[in-house]
Image 1 (cartoon, rainbow, N blue to C red):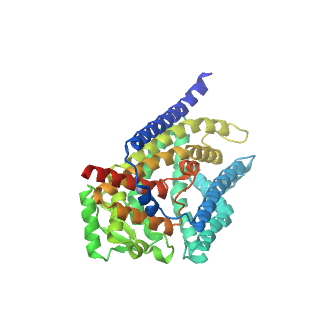
Image 2 (cartoon, rainbow, N blue to C red; image 1 turned 45 degrees about the horizontal axis):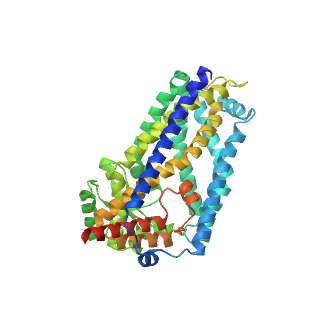
Image 3 (cartoon, helix red, strand yellow; image 1 turned 135 degrees about the vertical axis):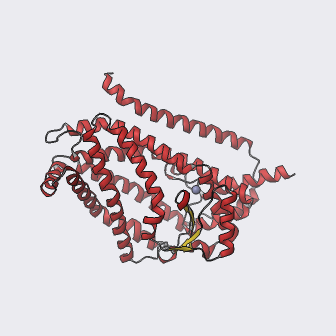
Length: 423
Ligand SMILES: [Zn+2]
């Protein structure tokens, strides 16, 4: 093997090695855990497990299909865009309208983004709006959905355009080590966005106000303190205008960290159940999942950029291209990064499910209310039209959380284990 391809293969080998060893450790640990766990009473399991409603199964099947279509459409579009002279013509057009290289790259990137959004819009409208409405999950009008889509596009333009122009400026300045600087800058951007999103971006879509139920607010803020994750307060967001889905989460970091409950949650859940949901969310902060996620994401970007260096060199040396710092190579770069993240997605999902289980257990330990936990799972399944028992393969590939059925089984094992200890 020539030295060049050796160098390029190294990050792949590290990435694959880390993924494989992580998955192996997890599988072994799960098997050991299951062997140790006490038996669940089958009667109790039958009681706790929600029915597999035909409507929910149909909805999730459509969701899987739109997910795969969306992936195929995105990658297909990038494939079509990087072919032939198209990127060169777009770059030449941008050059005629912009004086500096930075502006030219910004114009190129924004037209590419706007173009691909326009092409995928009909598909997004069907999968993101019509399907949701047909299943009674959305209360939004088509116009309000369009307004949100326009805002989302504006936000992604506002972030992606300067980021991409900046990345290409780095590539031109430092063609050998750009992937190192680029990954560093991208990590900094992620950290900054996590800090400002709850204050700047979220209020574009929903209205927030301090939680009016003071008893609940006090209980939740107290729970957060007990979990070692102090917050600035609890807020409610007016989701019910747009959706029937319910959620509770923490956003922000440090001085911007707050509890957010959707008003749909306040309408349909008991205080005990809300406490369980929040305790789960607190787990993510307690175990530093956000921080670890950012670090792992940064390492992934570093490996991805290091490998992308070869892709850029090849794309930039085609006739008509001026080198790897040519913005016309962007569709090739995006195609490569898109493919890489699709390939790595199942590994990311597996890690996510490990973390979700850890937080479910944390929620049970904090609240000691398996019945409230099971109540939450049953309500979430009904409200979000979740399939409680998807096929193991689909769960392994696509699910960021264990299925509702697996989460209930885990709660019942926790219950049985604690009953055993109490005896
Ligand atoms: Zn979670």
